[in-house]
Length: 321
Image 1: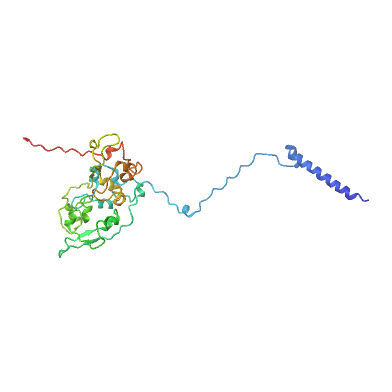
Image 2: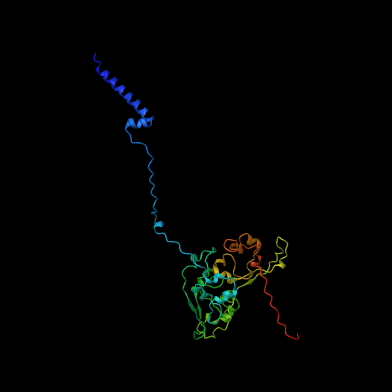
């Protein structure tokens, strides 16, 4: 019987077993294993290479526009003193405050939305409508033709504020007597815009009129009347002891276009709006803006900002009376 193959198999098995013992011993014996397996000496681990930062490759990142520096507010926003505003406002040919010229000169930039945006982000509306035209008069000559600048009006007023409640889109028969009676252009002019009585050449620009014959004034300050349902505040203080609220249009027109309030919040007609403190405190009426975020919060501690007592004018007394 030939036993050579068996001997070789046993030798191979013994060799494999011995090698396994050596590997197991080397794995757990540290320095002995390093010497036995002829490995390099142990040392500190090399620092891990930092992962490369992701590089923005989006279109937005590639075309990012650097932030614009903050710009100072326009001149008319820097004061609440009416004398200063009148001093800074340019004057028209007749001498009235010329808000149109002030707008073109950048003295104020009224916002088209309620939010008080930074000066460099103020949106003063879309491009001007630029449909300016003349209203011809019935006389044979054109001396009394009236000029109407659509471009000026559309810069601050929504089309629907005039067309519909004030003017038809065409075929308006406008008489000066109607305007002086508060109709058509008289809805605003004489109330919050220049008075047509002392500014004839603002519309009838072909007229030759004396210069600087009028003193400028800030139109549109309203002293509100109290509603019959108002009796007292929660503190029990009678309303008669608190002056009526006053609303200065000029303060608001410097900062906002007319269409921000009219007709979104208020009807532009005297007596059409009933405003109560309860509504303001709930964020309606004046409280839409006067909430402590857009403008000062209306309420206790700020009462004197609106409830301003009329200045007392001393009567002239002549000697001997």
